[in-house]
Length: 414
Ligand code: GAL
Figure 1: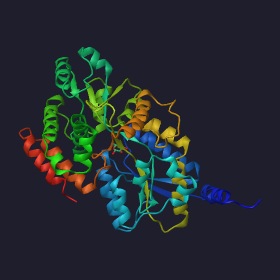
Figure 2: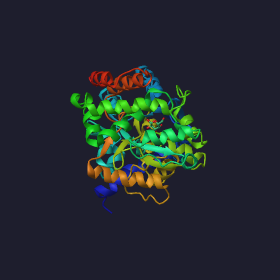
Figure 3: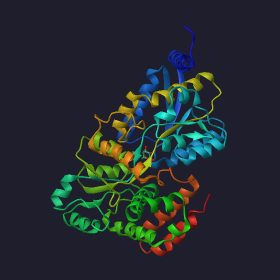
């Protein structure tokens, strides 16, 4: 039989995978920050699939929610000429690393497996540098969620607040019933996570895009942004005094244990609920029904000098997008598969809602990238803006009118 382009292409990957599977004891070092209960379970699925292909998973876990610590450690390794094979890097940072000329192309796999038609365009675009795939997406997390312990609400005799106008009354009743209204960990990225959901709830998706993605100065200095700071300030009364420095998963544990009523956090929190087999409910963050802040985890591959490691990277990239992996990983992680052609039957109601809302929000123009999770603007800009938000939240006397000016100035940092 004369080989067609299609059979040749299939062979390129097939031969590659076969070769990869036969490779003996090649280490593939993977940098990530998945260390909480649910995250570690998800990471173990990644390890399992890599090892099933005959490679050795070399774990490079750097604890610290949101990944700031991991990114600092990564820079040191790359600067010293010893990058890991793969690293969890997201959003515009992929472009920044691409510009450094240190990333490996995944096009060999991407073309054969037709990633362009398999992935939502909004995701595929982020994974490419200069037209080539340099990263493989793992999942889609939704950030604008509110996690709820239904029994706490029942005991407090109050409905779950669906708008910021309803929030203070509900919080008051929850407090009066002896619970902490809002579980929170006082770390800058957690403050920023809450803040972006408030901005989305107060101003809607168009305002969010204008202010936190396009960094429009008028939007940043607007009354709407001031109102978002006012709401953030009001939440100081709804968290407990031990919040400073608490990790996000310890805050989730407060909801799990029935100490707190709610947590505003992305759906990696669901990994903790399912791991603990505890009851939970999910609601879009107040005022954000129909809108969706996305946060796509992805693995970026760094150029390597050893051919067997380079091949291992392609094998890993292919495995990450396989239907079986997408299911087991995302069931543990709390996210949804990044492939839109997979059935959601085995996922819980929150994931099913997330998948439906992702599509609907994309069509309605209400799908926006998370700024707190490095999807929206360059890391230096996001960092400067995060500093403003966290300083404001931790200074009870700070004024919202000043905060919007400082936020607008921080948005100019590159
Ligand atoms: C996000 C990341 C998630 C989860 C979370 C908490 O930035 O995308 O996968 O790890 O931080 O660490």
